Structures are given as structure tokens and as C-alpha cells.
Image (cartoon, one colour):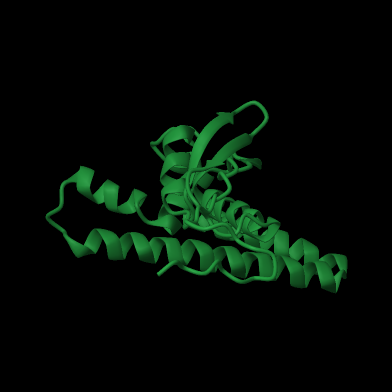
Length: 187
């Protein structure tokens, strides 16, 4: 996207969209026409929300330095996702992955990212519940959701199984007798 954003103007983009929608309408395929119009509406809403968010964030402190304003924009998930989508986000994938993982409500750490395959290995760093499959699935889903906007390079997550905690050994002062009765205490 190196210089393409500099040559696009609203009038030409609007004409292009209208031409494509007109061609679809002329084809007589009503379902395709409806789908295209829905797609255009969805994209307009998405970009409109992003632009509104930029205006809101920048307008909060008009005296902010460029670095502070950029920090506010990069800290916003919607704006950051638009920047990533258009390869305009200034952070490298590893930084964006770390930022996304900070938002995961489970104790995970990056155990390695392979940019060639898109596989991100995560390791649980603390207790995340019962250790059952449902919990592992919840961790993977939370990570997938957090990474979707900031690190689309991640195409697969491998979650390392947490280390087994040692069994709790209970020590008592008197042996347990069959029949469930404790030994009598001496007076």
C-alpha cells in the first residue's frame, strides 16, 4: 500500500462503487446485488466508526504531542485494526502480538511465533480453572479474538498444556482406621 492511499479520492472511489453496483444490477442477479449493497453498507459503517473514533481520540486533547496522539490511536482496538488492515500500523508483528495478549483475560505467554506458518505457540502461566478441555478452548478463543484485529499474521494458535500440579499429600497425626472411627485418645 506504499503510495496508493495518496492517489485515491472520494469522487473516484464513489464512481467505482456505483459502476460495480450498476453492473451487478444489470446482470439481473438480485441476490448478488443485495449482497454487494450489504457489503458496501457494512464497510461504510466500519470505516465510519473508525474515522469517528479517530476524531474523538484526537479531539480529547488538541494540545497533545504527535507521539501522544499516535499512542492514543494505537491503543484503540478499532483504529489499530484499521491501521493493521492497511499495513499502516507502525509496530512490528511481535509487538502487536504482545499488545493483543495483554488483553487476554487468561494467564498466557508467547512461547514463540513462526511468521512462515502463522503459528503462535502460547503457554499458560498460571491457573486458569479446572484444566478441563472447556477451559483450554476458552483460552484459545480469547487469544484468537484478541489477536484477530492486531495480528492477522497469526493464523493458528497452539496452546501448550499446563504443567501438572503435584497431588496434595495429606498428613494427619493419627492413622485412619477401617470403619471410619478415630482411635481413642488416652486420658
